[in-house]
Image (cartoon, rainbow, N blue to C red; front, side, top):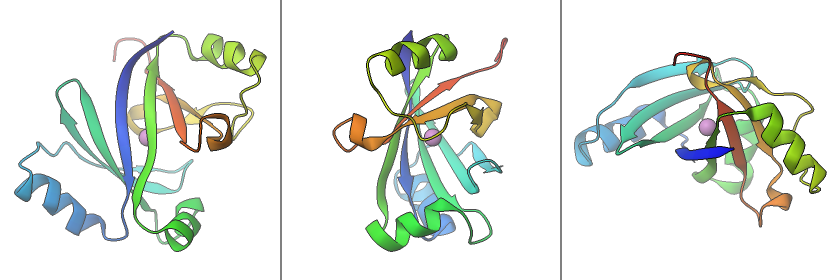
Length: 136
Ligand code: CO
């Protein structure tokens, strides 16, 4: 079951500049950065009122986000819903015809299991589903 809007992600070409904007100009608490090897991204999280803003940036200038930034420029990248049972939600949505970007979930930020629904299944919006390990 989907239980929360976990985060909204923005693709940024200059991570430090964007971090400074959210931290200094907007005054939102900066949780820190994390490298997500499976997605080849560096992420920065700003928790606010039960959800978070996630800034995503290509890790070491590589990965699918490089192409995304070249093609579409900076901007909204995905929204992420938290699931309390990822396998069940994926199976239910596949049954309804939703297409996913991968067969299996991978490990995302905060060591959550994550999987992405193809934007063409969601009116052009890239939707991530995540599930936190027990006790998170
Ligand atoms: Co995300």
